[in-house]
Length: 337
Image 1: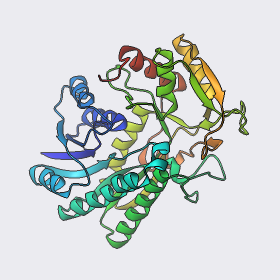
Image 2: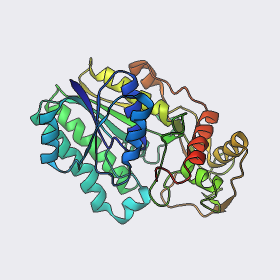
Image 3: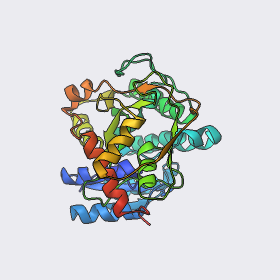
Image 4: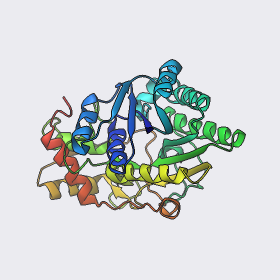
């Protein structure tokens, strides 16, 4: 039997992708160290799909664990989610981020090469564009990074580009995500951050459910329609389906390709707060606080390349995003615990 390996498969995006891959007829193995995820997510994916997902606890920096996995199972491709992703934390613990994200990816690729597995979908990020000079942002935009997290993603992109230049039989997709939000419509799986959330939507949800008193909106004096930061929010199920399409693309195309996964539409922080309140009929108190260092005013994707190469476009609306986020949070007030 052939398998797709998901590193970090129990995480927010990993678990939603596992579900969509199983729905598309793939067999899935999750390899996760559970530093910011839960085995319960995969249990629920199995319940939703009625299919077994092989779940292995391990760390991508451990070559022996990877060798054991590849020896026991015939893996044909890897979707690489495993990585630390909190911008603020990365500025406090840069070595931890570079070790986990960059060293982990190098180790993974070395062991993949040993076993002649040369198809890789990599979770990159719109942070590799830094403070882009134009929006919408096409894949040709010059890359830079404003924090160690973004820098780690950018370093990995360079490493994978160098790998393909040296060994052209690799097939690699660099999927540059914009801002994933929402949850599966069942309300069974969703975003369950440890501690204080780093992303806007779980913060809004936790305020709405009463876990937090109010939302902090960082700055209302940006050059945007309402002064708050504008981002490209993409429903996590759309994002997961993009990975299915990327894997299918790699079956026919070698080389390395960078692809934005976004909607091409920018919404402000207050747009998101207001939509959440209106659609879900729930109050979200907020206060305006000073800007955060490193935050940029506006960031949204030029998504046409994904449509052309993968036949993929984001389908879900802002209403879907806020409704599914609230369905998840209100039925799982404490996440997977």
